[in-house]
Image (tube, rainbow, N blue to C red; front, side, top):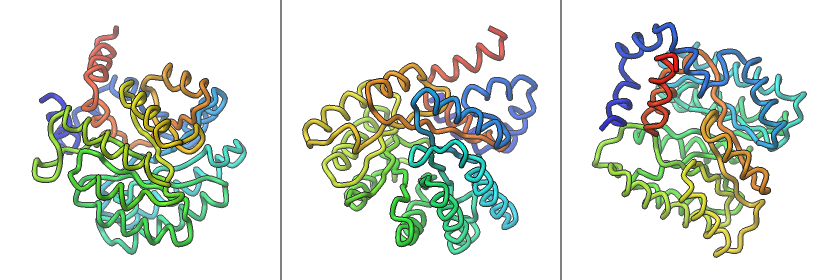
Length: 305
């Protein structure tokens, strides 16, 4: 129930203004967001690199209905990729792009053009791009844009949200040679007509999708902080003859850092999702909704403990 309330709040303008305006909020947000400026993100990425972790960077923002804002977001990604060149991350560097931030709500062609510009800049830096998945109404558009991007940039990845009923079919379709797929549970408030609602059902759906991807010929990117899902991933890797280098784990910035470093120390590729930017509200609320421990952390911090 708390999670559903927080997801509803993530799209409330009234709550956004109240939370964003609270003096201590931005300090607490630093737990989950690397900063508001590209230089702050770069500093965080350099620290993660030095501990053996890979990164994927998200310039925060979504659901823009302004063409100039969409263009500005694309430019921000290109500027960021240029700033990351001296770090020599190679394929251990990546950017994550929400298509709604680059014009998807306005026009698919606009979003595709901006995404192509970002993919070209990433290729010039030796980096990759993964398309974030948003609510269920965007899935077909996102997958269509993905197919077009892969014509010139075959390493372009995509996130699939396991709680959607359609996702097992999408995982089958995306399990071909070289296909990079980030599997997440799902972080949007979806109706019961399109998505599993209970935690147990979502977990089961995640395992079914994970099995499809691990049995396929693609490159699964297992986004989880759940010890059970990590153990299941390792069991499936053994069952399907996978090696430590043909899949990876992904985790969020600021969450279970000890586990991130432990898995990387054991030889796994661990990629940390690093968000930055001033439009942090929606992302932050979804992180609170995902785990009760995050809410407890937020309340303790506001109380000065």
